[in-house]
Length: 384
Image (cartoon, one colour):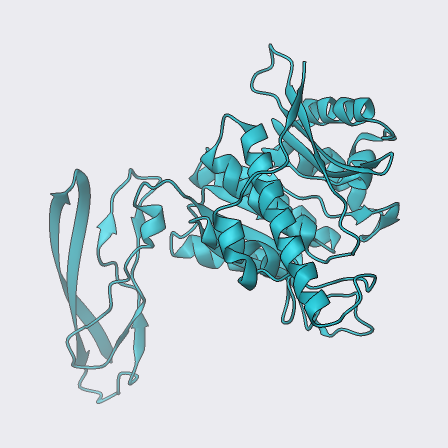
């Protein structure tokens, strides 16, 4: 017969106003007279240093330990992520969207710019493809809702679910989008002030990228949970059921989307009378009318991939730095985006690739300075 006993030493102390508990454990194995053997390795859950934040929100970081017979227990205390402990001007973002091995779309287009702006970013890839789907062929995997939730459970088990922001982009399956709803609720149970930036990637120029059954789920369930919504013209039409043919139509669509939930709405691209516009709207409180504006941008004669993903990330980053001025955040985001596109086109021209070629890959690495320190050339025009 084999049994195990243990001794635990518990110390409580306080540093910087934060109470902690330290537990040190020793385990011994006793081999009975029947001479049976204890398994060579036994996994034992052990708590180590713990930051106490109330009964419901205790955080602890300890790796499960392996106990060998007749040996004193040794284990590694896991350091908590500093982003969850230290107050700073930036935040911690969970970004759930697509990923490509080569090229810059989805998380590849969003994570690096957010990091340049000072954010800690944890990516979950809704799909992982060799390259984007504009190429003749692609290979890869698609994550389903169950697999997404498994990742969330892993983070929760280690008390790693504290985020200031959730960013979502392309989602290709109904189960995955339904699980996103659960993720939002779970993250807000940890941080009620979580900001959810939703880029409802559904299509463009009258063409759907997703299965039609996802559209009503976005409209009825996802949009009401969003803090900021960043659709393009076609997506705004899908979500509101209204056609957009003018600036007035776009402003009205923003008001309708405010009524569904999000306080900030940015229609990131609006093609009206050969002009390329961005329309922004910020509803600060229910009693007042939203602050609405437009930014007019020059059209660049080329088609790029990942621009919507980059724009959503830039809007998240700059709006966090300027929470009370969506206009300023949009001006800075537009400045960075335009600079990236210009650099991309310049490099393709230098490589003698004709700009008419579709789906140019963004040159993010070469545009770091323009992302961190954009120069605003296109200013917001407010509607009164």
